Length: 117
Image 1 (cartoon, rainbow, N blue to C red):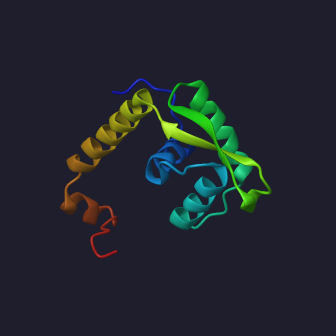
Image 2 (cartoon, rainbow, N blue to C red; image 1 turned 120 degrees about the horizontal axis):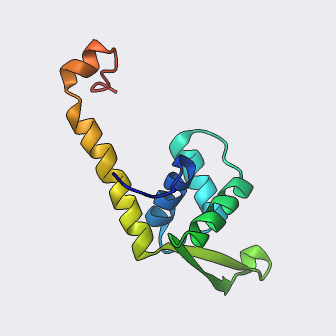
């Protein structure tokens, strides 16, 4: 069992940073999460999660180059640290282990057969 303090929203933000690397910043992460979940995600919520994840040592950040599209402002870009990668791997292992223990017949009995979706 993993021993982390990673919340569900933090986990998907951490995954989005990994998926968007090396161009992950708060606006691109919020847009990616909206595309994937179909839910509205505020950049403020993403920004708060990014700060928590960086404080926990799961992410690191640096300022990118200034761009004209942002009026000369620089973006804070995020990358997953080795420790953050380990936490993601552990979370995935737990989820996969639990999913693998549920047989298709059990899912069907529970009305949770998603094989056709």
